[in-house]
Length: 495
Image (spheres, rainbow, N blue to C red):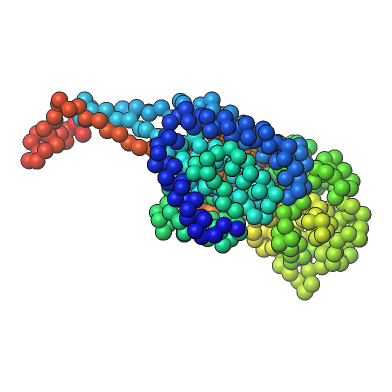
């Protein structure tokens, strides 16, 4: 853990380095991007091992969801940076001629980047790419909940970059508090809406701009005319990547009543197809990050009252402690004296606290007051609600906070209506998660789900100041702007 004096000195070193102006040179920035890419490739195997150690991510998932995204982002910035940094001329109104105007892009300065634990490598390094491209210096704060990854990133950065240019500061919440009390030129934070509010309040003390990549309950609508097989496969994939610990994972399903039974049957088949009958033993199924997260998820399940289970005896309610049944066998929890939000465990429910394992779990017939509908789940639990008319689904979504992602499975004509009737940070039609893989699309939330955008050029812009430059002709002086405002009637006509 860093002491206060160490933290303050590191930030002072960053300011001193930035004041040399060397980060403003585009050639310098490109060189640093190449160095970062070489470091990621050099550390690739160790990154994969660290992600396995902290989250039980397979090397394949680690590469596809973390390493490959970072490499693609670096390549995109290397390819386009010179064009992005060029001043952009703007048109000049006739009454201001012969003056001219342009926008130049300059680095904001010293940036603080705070990353979460769910994608601990990608969500720290991806914003760093934007910071490097814009010409900023960077203080990186990895999550303490993935300690192996945090230590590895610290080693990689120290080996690759001058500490005055890019530095890593580790620690828990007290270190976050200390960092947020300092003055930065930008704070880039990825995490929950609750912590996003804490960051925004701290940033307001110094009027520091923020980019807040948050989360929320991202809905997934499956309409009556959807391709059920495709929808089931893509929903299961999007929900269970990283064991549901993804900010843009489908948080709950809104399914048309006519297709719900077929969709849920197909989803169970897809779970088995992807992870096998013994899901706990699958090397492709990650673990929940910590005991604290396990306790929260287990509590979320036990708070709900469920009546039956498709893989058990109807009405056979019991409390499940984990580890006493066949892998993948459905489970139901007793709701005690009638917890809110009646529902039923359609499939899954197995919990092993020691292994930090929660089986893929589908809860059917969920009502809006069910505990699983009150907060972002951030785990492999999927509540299912049913609708008869699409207007019901729209009304429910719009009644709640604006989500980070929105998923719709159905025909294109209806998809256009859904886009016009709702709002969200991003959207996938007939898919899940994939919008995040296109670096030409901005990524970010709206309202409670986030502030600001990044990925691709948007990352460069997020860490840049768009500076307006107005140049007047030194040899021609227009008299109408001076007191006593002669030719005022003429000025009114041309303005």
